[in-house]
Length: 94
Image (cartoon, rainbow, N blue to C red):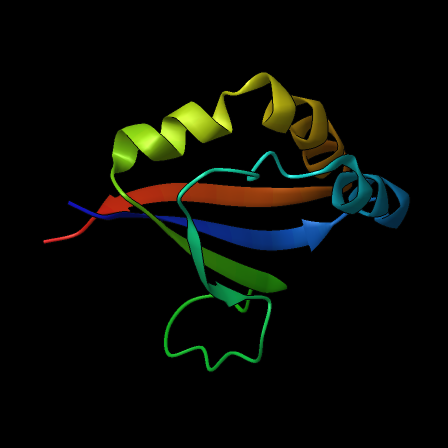
């Protein structure tokens, strides 16, 4: 059953760290993932306006956590966490 990971960028703290994150690689090579949305225009119906939102579809929640905790992604992740405040959420499909 597919699972979705949603990244919500709340506030940027260090643009250089976010640039380092972009160039560090995302560890998605060979991972069965489909990007559904990535920092495009938004219409906020409720709550605070985030700086950006990305949504990716994985085969299941385990595939998300395998990718997220992989050594490849962990090397890049440190830059994202230094660069901005994010929320990351896994949602299983129904």
